[in-house]
Amino acid sequence: MLKVKLRNWLHAVCLILAAASLLTSRPVALLVQAGEPPPRVVAIGDIHGAFDSFTGLLKRLELIDERQRWIGGNSILVQTGDFLDRGPGERPLMDLLRDLPKQAEKAGGRVIVLLGNHEVMNLIGDFRYVPAEGFESFSNSGSARKRERALQQYLRHLNRQASSRNDPILDSQDGVRQAWLEEHPEGFIERMEAFSSGEYGKWLRRLPAVARVEDSLFLHGGVHPDLSSYSPEEINRRIAQELRLFDRYRRYLERHQVVLPFFTLSEMELAVHRELELARSRSQQALSGLMPENSDENQHIQILEAFLSSVNWWIRHPDGPLWFRGYATWPEEGEEVDSRIDRLLDAFSVRRLVVGHTPMLEDGVQGRFGGRIFLTDTGMLSSYYPGGRASALVIEKGSVQTVSLDP
Image (tube, rainbow, N blue to C red; front, side, top):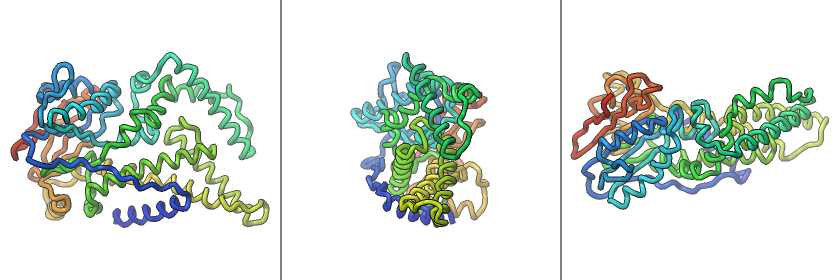
C-alpha cells in the first residue's frame, strides 16, 4: 500500500513540476564495492556530534592515527548517517567525514558516508535538534549585524503579509522582536546559509542514502517491505530528486515572497498555509466575477499544495528509508517477519541489512533475526543517551563482531 501511494504521489508531483519546468533528472551515483572482498568492513551508526567518541573508536579500530589521518589500508568504513544534531562536535565531524574518503581512497580503502534523517532535516530547515554549540560554531564577528538585518526583513515581511490580509500592522515592540531573537541565536543565519548554498550543503546533497558493500546493504533507517522492489540506485535517485525538488520549491516561494531565505521548515509551512488560503480566496473571487481571472493562480495553488505534501515524501515519511524503525520493533519470531526479511534480502541479493536510527543502549550493536539485521545506533553521544557507548560492527572474512570503546 505504501509503495502504491508513494508512486501515485510521485506521478502527480512530476506532472505539476513538469508544467512548472522545475523537474530535473540528474542521477546520483550508487556507492558499490566491486572486486575482491575487503579484509574488513566497519559500520558505525549515529554519532550526533560526539566527535571525541567517534575518533576514539576509529583509533581503537586502527582506522586513523592520533592526527586523524587514515591508516586503515584497504578497509571500508561505512557511517550510516545522523552525525548532525544534539552534540557539540558537528563541524569537526563534517570536516573529518569530508576528508577521510579522499585519504582512504589513496590507500586503497573506502569511506562511505550515508545520509540520515537528521542530515536531511538540516537541509530542509528543520533545526529542532540543533544544540547551542551548533549555532555558535557558525557565528562570527558579523553575526549580530546579520541577525538584526534578518529580523528587520522578517518584520517587514510580517507587515506585508498582514496588509495583504487586511490585518493590523504589527508593532515591533509587541514581543515579536524578542521572540524571534530567542528562536534565532547568533550563528543561525550562517548555519542556514551553510546548509543551503554553502559547502556543507553541497556536500550533504551529494551523499547517498544506501550503499551495498559485498554481501551487506547499509542505510540509516531501513527499507520498508513495500519498497523492496526499488533497487539501491533507485532509492538513492529518489532521495536526491526529492531534495532537489524541495530546494526548487523553496526558491519558488522566495521569488513569490511567500517565505524568506532564512525561514525554518515550520515557518515555511505556516507561511504556505496562509498563502494557500489567500490564493484559494482569490481564485474563488475570480470564479465569482469579483476579481480578474489569473491564469497563473491555479498553478500557484498546485505548487503550494505540492510543497505541503512533502510531509509524505520519502525524506520525511516515517516509513521512508531514512526514518523506518521496523527492524528494531518487529517481534523476533514469527513466520510473517521471517518472510519479510527473506524478501528484503532476496530483493537486494545480500546476506544482511545494517542500519542505525533506533538507539540500542544496553548491549551495543545488536544483531536480530539470526544475524540478518544489525542495528548500529548505540547512543554514542552518552551525554544525551545515558548508558550509550561508541560501538562498531566489524565484518571480516565472513565473521561479524562488535568493537566498543570502554564505557
